Length: 307
Image 1 (tube, helix red, strand yellow):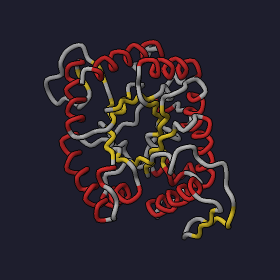
Image 2 (cartoon, rainbow, N blue to C red):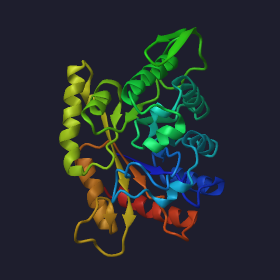
Image 3 (tube, rainbow, N blue to C red):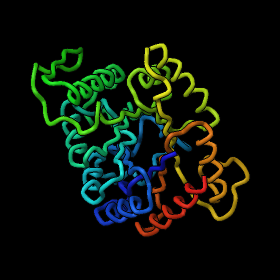
């Protein structure tokens, strides 16, 4: 089982020094991947609650570095570790321009890109991005088709409901064959079908491990019905980690508690067949530094190696 670690891309510590420190140490330790998220703004009066926890938007989202540029910066300071988006909210982006950015990152990182896509949940962010809320799923489907075409064919030609590309050569092409792995976050029936038909892995976010197994089996069944090799689909578990000195006995959230409790959750994810666990531990309490995050990362790496 692989392990990834989220870069310090959010909050007060987000900046070049912290990124270099964490990226290099993660690679030295043996982590398999570095991850980023995608947030545009922190609305003062949000129209929809945050889909995790108590619905409050984390205060760290007031300050967020761009995901692709953050990974590009990390690529310049590492040599082997993979670079992953968890996730890009696809309908916010023009797919042709996004394909160029991701291809550039794949070339510059010598084939290190792992692309996680999602749809998003915030009407406020859609509005700020100038992206229509209606038909967002269908736009995402077209975008994925376009990005794959740009990655794999020349000349490229596309005519859909929302986008059009005149017959053109678009280069350079990606390093990875046939293209960088595509991961998808999903929990609605239509989004789960999108995973089954178009993705290389499922990224369940905010779904308890107790519910992940049955949902993943459903995705694999849909993949078989679509004529795909369901065994090739990967499960990548997102772990929002909080380390506590004492055990949490009541109403414990998964991946929180003592190192022993967190290790048990890692083991449970492995038992479900997870190919990778992505650790998000960058939401630091006020006053903590990038060095504190590195210390936390080292502790989590020791836990991971015992699983």
